[in-house]
Length: 152
Image (cartoon, rainbow, N blue to C red; front, side):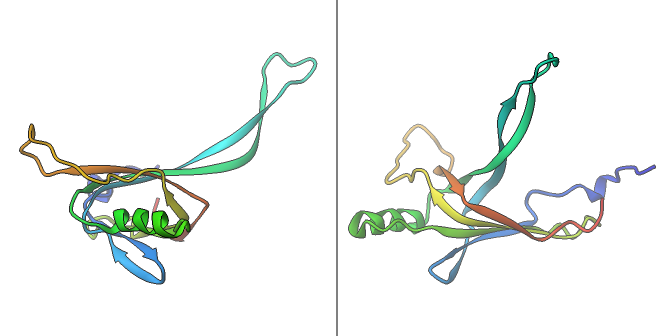
């Protein structure tokens, strides 16, 4: 029987993320949180003699979100480039969990063909003493698990 050892849980602060844009790796040191999800597309399958509806997986849809500290022009520059040229930029995103206190090891996931849904162009908030943040939702076309957790 396996049991969970508390030190093996993964700290969300231990790791890094970077975007591969035009052949360059842009460290996302200004990211506060990143999450990527896969949702299955399913078709309903109804059959005579069955009261329950079956479901057949017909594809996958990749979406994600990032919360960023509002201090880098990286994504605003990509938006401005699209406005000037009409060529939208897709990039790859690497997200790495690497908690040295966990025996689970390191996990590295590559999100391929990321494209932002929206970008904050300008922001002020006179009602807050907290640092400015921005949320950026995105989609991605494919993924690969480059390094899986080695335990569990």
